[in-house]
Length: 443
Image 1: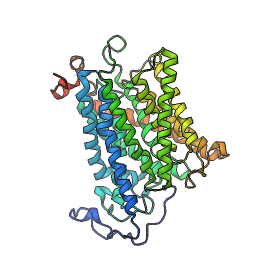
Image 2: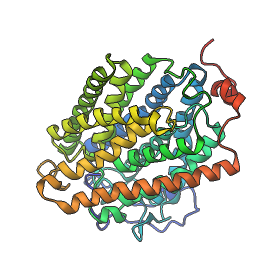
Image 3: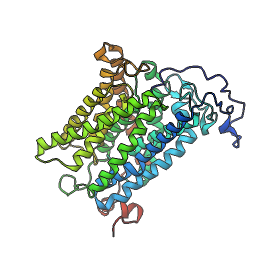
Image 4: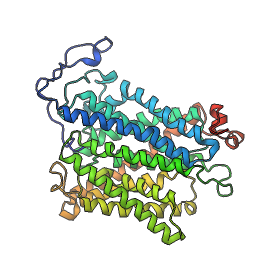
C-alpha cells in the first residue's frame, strides 16, 4: 500500500479503552469514537466502494471466469468453490486473520493477537492503515484480498479436488501462508522494513497464489484423461463475462489501494487500464502470429495477465511503464502456457502461467521502473539508479515464492491426511456438480 511505508505512532486521540477481550457486547469497539476531523468522507466512500469492487472480482467475476473455463459437468462445483471460499475466509479474517496479518508487529514476522475478533479495530482511523478512513473500512477492504487469493489457486486443481478438501486447504493456506506474507509486506513486517513495495498485491496475492498453484498441480497430479480427452472451456461467453467483471473490479483492487480519493488512486487507475488493454492486444498478436488465428480466450487471458502484472506497481509507475508491463504480460504468460505441456504439469486453468508469471515479473519490473516522480511515497527503481530497491524486490519474489511453496505443500499434506484430496476416479468422471453437490447446471 502506498501509505504503508513505515509504522508510526498511533494518531493522537485513538485511545484503546480497557475493555477486556471476551466481553463480547463491546470489545470490537474498544476505541474512542471516530473523530470527524480525521475522517474524510470521500476517502471512506472510495475505500468502501473499492471493497465492493473487489468483492465483484470474486463473485461473480472469478466464479464465472473459472466456471466457463471448465467442462460443463464441473461448472457448478467450480463456481461453488469461489462462493464458499469467500464465506469461510471472511469469517476467518474477522476472528483471527486480520490480527495475524495487520496486528501489532511481532519481530517482523507476524501480527500479534491483540486484534482477535476485531478487538480494538473500531471506527477511529489507524495512523498507518488509512489515516483518513475508519479502521474497520481498511479491515473490510483487506478482507476481500484475503478471500480472492485462495480462490485464485482453485483454478490449478479444477475438476479433481474434493469440496471438503478445498475448504480445509483454504483455511490452512490462509492462516499459514497468506497472513504471514501479508504482514511481511503490508503489516510492517521484515520485507517492508527492508524497503520492498507491493502496491496492491503482486507478491501478496499473485506470486503467492501462482507458486501455490504450481505446487497444487504437482501434488494432485493430472486430471483423468489429461492429454487425451477433450477438455476445452465449455462456455466462452461466460469466460468473457467473468473477465469483464474481473477487469471492472480490478480498479477497486488497484486504485482502491491508494486508500483514498487522491492522486495516487488516479495513477493506479490509469496504469491498471493501460496494462490490461496492452496485455490483451499483445497476447492476441502473439497468438495470431503463432497459431494463425486470434481467439476470444486469448484476448481475455491477456487482459488478466496485464492486470496481474501491473498490480504490484500500479501506484508507482507511469502510463508508459504500465504499457511496457502489459507487453511483458501478454507475451511471457502466453509463452509459459505454451510450454506447460512440455513441462508436464496439469494447471487446469493456467493460474501459474497467468498469475504466477505476471506476479513474479511484475514485482521485478516494479523494482526497475517505479518512480518517486510518480509517487513520492514510493521509491525509484533500478533504471533511476536505486540498486537497493531492486534487490529488495528480488528478495521478495524469492522469499514469498519459496515460503508459499513449502506452506502449500504442508497444507495439502495435512488436508490429505484429514479428509483426502482427490475425488475417486468414478466421481471425477461424473463431475463435481453431481458427485460433490448433487446438482446439474444444465438440463
